[in-house]
Image: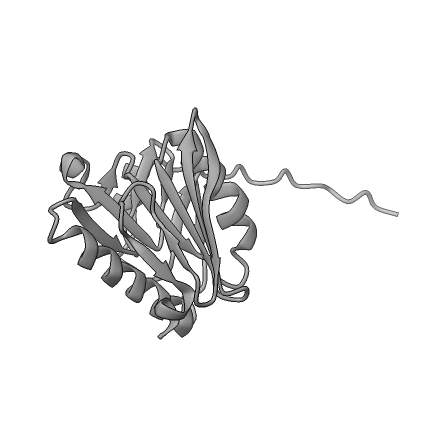
Amino acid sequence: MSIATLSRPKARRTWTYDEFAAESSETNLPTELWDGEIIMSAAPRPLHQIIVTNFAAALNEHVRPRRLGRGIVSPIDVVFGVSKAVQPDVVFVASAQTSIVESACIRGVPELLVEVISEGTWRRDRVDKKALYEQFGVAEYWIIDPDSRLIEVFTLAKGTYQLHARSVGPEKAGSKLLAGLKVSFNQLEA
């Protein structure tokens, strides 16, 4: 009988955002950096993209005429730290924050982020990203769940997210940050 030799597992490569950005080529696949680890997801489904596009349109129709800022759709890197970069589905950058928008990414904390849950992203959007956005002080976080036809709006109060609005189907959910911005799931899937 011979003794099998166990090989040592290879050390996991960790990346900084700047290393990752320099090495990677442009892709439309969702690609994020979590504690130095590159996480790629499959391309979103058509309904996901319809919701993202319609939300961004409603957001920009509300904020642009009022000169409040700008909504930006993914893929766009939002860099929270040396080894942490995410790609929210929709990002709102307030007019007073334009300095965080760089030529290749958004480096800093936007006022409002939106995630549309895709197959396989429920935990990441509801738990991981919610905790990350809360930790970094994102003022408002929207979660849109196509399977439940649900919109939830969380606002930061004393460092913790509180549910501000919740709507299903034709009911409208509104923003606390952007007074007057209200959308329904029915509107987003149209």
